[in-house]
Length: 508
Ligand SMILES: *[C@@H]1O[C@H](CO)[C@@H](O)[C@H](O)[C@H]1NC(C)=O
Ligand SMILES: *[C@@H]1O[C@H](CO)[C@@H](O)[C@H](O)[C@H]1NC(C)=O
Ligand SMILES: *[C@@H]1O[C@H](CO)[C@@H](O)[C@H](O)[C@H]1NC(C)=O
Image (cartoon, rainbow, N blue to C red; front, top):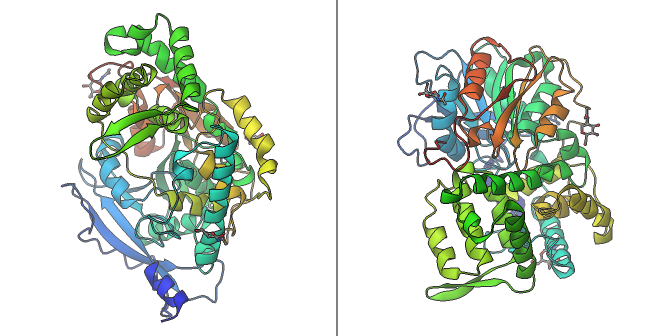
């Protein structure tokens, strides 16, 4: 078998020329799922779609892996499509984690449907490296740690970009948001409802939703974009500084809340003010650049807690208010260089593990979607400076993936939305942004809403990434109402979470 053919097969593409099945009238045959469904009443299916929407003569097809969480509260009033972000997050496993949270919020009267977007999970999985082949730099090092690290991140990003374009030269450009939008509408058609889109996208799923609404404005029924990315930057900027626009404020808010609840927050026991706590954490992180904290591990080499690891861990834990007490314990242990307490804190982490993001899928989708490229590391000097100006404490967060790999990426998605997101949709969109979301700032919700006529921004006045990071009855009622009859909250609506930070009975 030829290399190309075996590669195509490995990617799940039927290399056999298949005539696309008629769509829209045959429905979807739901059945058992072949993933661990953890007892949820979900069903799965395959849907055959065109492999290459840009080439009418291409009859190759692709089988999308679908999952449905049926309405749990009376007969279904229709389907809401979900996407969980990244982009790069799979749909099937994420549905298992999120349906029990998102289902009740929608009122339980809609079927929730998701799918593995191209590049993820079981659909054209974007994998150019075996897991053991890929280096650790991009995942674990931040360019702002030191000039040496910055060079290393650039080099590794370059060889990943180079090898991916070589190894996936046949299929890499079939992955991307515009084709994923078309896949989504194939699913909407196959559902045999009214052909209109009902959608709730969180995080990176907001770029998919905004792109869908911009490409098919007449097919929009109800679309919620929650934890909004600046899609202009996503497509057009080498760096996406909006990602860390409120990272610092979220961090400072976390420290202040800690001092409001000193009994639950050990950071408040080692310093006497939020300012002093901030300073000691920042100084400690700085020290880690030259003196990593070595944590002994039984029967293995010690684990080095570097600046990059401590910094990334902090920001990514700020996604989840339920873990703020844990974060406070870990930061306290790091500040005290107390490895025993550090190991203890980690072993007590009972928070549900996040669905692992597929690093290669993230790059495959993001980088193919992104338009600009650069030639040299020095071309990123200004970009890195912009990050430092935007965030004092987290200027390197995710930059290896978002910036360094994409800047050197070898191919482009076959189709990209290149418009300006100034759109009049058949029904108005609902945007949701949290006051203190460390990676998708409220400002991005406002920015995107400005382009979608009649859309409204609901502000959830709390912490964490997307509205589901903290439970808010007020937000949940607004979401249920919008899906029920299209009623938008009034412009300027601000919803408080049910519980303040560091409250023990916080539900997710
Ligand atoms: C692929 O990766 C190897 C290291 O694993 C590197 O030596 C080579 O230059 C890379 N190829 C390209 C085209 O970047
Ligand atoms: C939205 O953000 C983009 C990218 O940062 C910017 O160019 C544009 O002016 C912003 N639009 C509004 C309405 O703020
Ligand atoms: C939120 O709603 C639940 C269920 O209706 C209710 O039991 C709870 O008291 C509400 N919490 C707040 C803070 O309003």
